[in-house]
Length: 640
Image 1 (cartoon, rainbow, N blue to C red):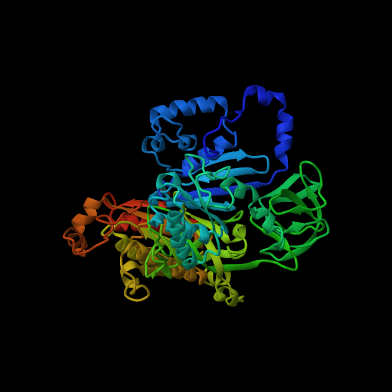
Image 2 (cartoon, rainbow, N blue to C red; image 1 turned 90 degrees about the vertical axis):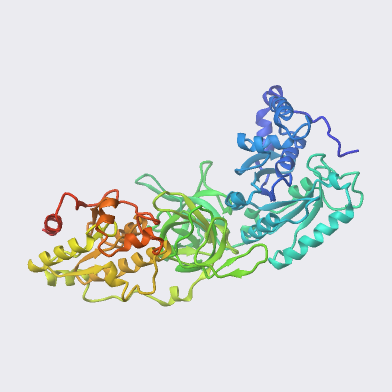
């Protein structure tokens, strides 16, 4: 029977030495298909990829010997070749027989080259599946014929559809373990079809396979005469790739690098995301909107008459216009949109939950900006597809949110152009990727609200008061003495004729922030609002003093970023927890210790000490009067 294992011709050193140039030339002009395998745990993803590598003769002799040895020692097939070991490279994966990380493998046939991403099936590693799917042209969703459609099958299918992968193969695996039953296969396909319609998946190709035995992988199986469709590899060789599809779209190229080797050459390098470009073509640079024409298309191998989606090139312009990394070069008469507020879907990928209002770095294309996320409009239950009310998003949660960026960015809806509609969020303190997102559309208010030019600016306000504006930001534990010292500082500055205003944490919560509690998300929003108010007051030329616990470095950095360089003075009132608790002027620590007061900083909510405060005062060694005098002298010195 043709599903039985054949003896392939393995690649040897002699074969490579025979004609490596001819081998490379043979593969040079083939198209490249990127695809993923996904599904629930133990559906056979790694085994399937191993079988594809084996049957496509992409295993070296030493790899085969190692595979045979490993199959006997740690394999799961009773000493027979365990194809999964070709992919499960991590020791933890081999020991458990599961895939944890995304494993990428290359192989080729006479018709096409392939990069396959084997993505993990466990729910806690869903974020890795999103990573693998983000660049895929096609998804192979595996289902164990014995188990049918499972929760993780639905989750991965939802994400595949969300990420815009239109070419989907439903590979019903392990058909050998259900006696190659056509009835079982069609029952699973009917069950999956019902779910696919619910999530808006237009179509998929069902194929009954056995990754272990090789049925319907490369050649049709004698065990399933009832199946007349293509084999898996046959379909992979014919499936369309995204680069070819994107050539029909208007021209788009995000600038990755400004190439300036000498005074006579200035080019703009990047990978073309969509469309076709030719010398003489009219283009526009966004977000500035400046227009010109393409002078030349430069590559290492020489200038081109045209370049298409998927190619990496350097463009030179006919005119000297401003263009830098992060800008997007577009077709002049069909530009993409530019906005600073969007609706988007987020897939949260961090252990720490999302905090609405916290500033994150947003990376889209080649540009990185600062962005804040609103409280979710809703969270999606991928099993029932219900829209759930939610205050935040936890690990692997999927929700729809509004996002604001600190400046307008060029974009397109993810469904139209993944390169200009897909983004990641990065924690500014740890540089960890915390979410992947897909833009739906710009919010109308981002198009309708504009900055109003004012004749009396912040410099004029400051000059009238004969002082430099500043924010003096007091931070420390409750009971550290922030408010006491800040009050003394303001009295001293006022006596010297300085124009000041003190924003105190308790006072603000009686009015502006009376709707906020003390959860981490509310603390973030509390400081965001105070930072915006402080910024407006510095625009009026004032010296603003603030006394807030402000426990998180990220939010203190957010306020610092709002100010001009040198205008933010962080004062760390350094008081040990035991000293602050002993003072307990307001009786708050006692309530927190007894459980009456939740989310209290220092007890059951963290305080992140400043790492580079301009001033640190230790209230154990200094009296409030002495600490205030030090701060006043610092402020006066920076104003001189």
